[in-house]
Length: 131
Image (cartoon, rainbow, N blue to C red; front, side, top):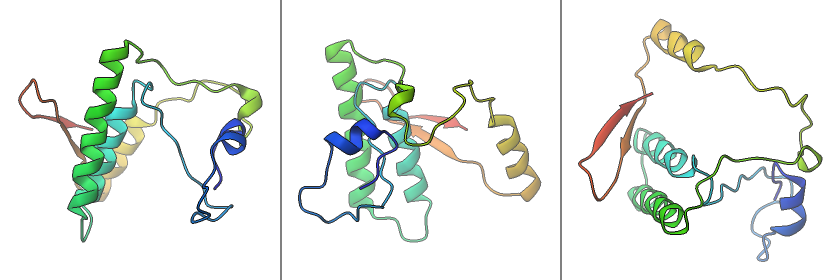
């Protein structure tokens, strides 16, 4: 199991040995303020695939809601960060420029469908968010 953070490679391992050692994996913590939305985006990508696994989709969406609840209950939603010394892939540390506009233009030029996120919140009505 290969994490993008060296410190996770030392601390978080597959005790059953199911995941190959060189397979890239990503751990998104519940305190990461972007985690719930990232999971919702992932679930929507799965739903729009050729044969969506709805058990996976429903569980990912419930996990996103559990993350939101955890953040609210613990007042801990925070911007994600990484110590440069822990980075598996060294960078110059510069803030990346937004690629949002470029990807929108590419999707429009190719005529492909946009991605719609469904924001699920038990206290509010469903809200569609165009990305």
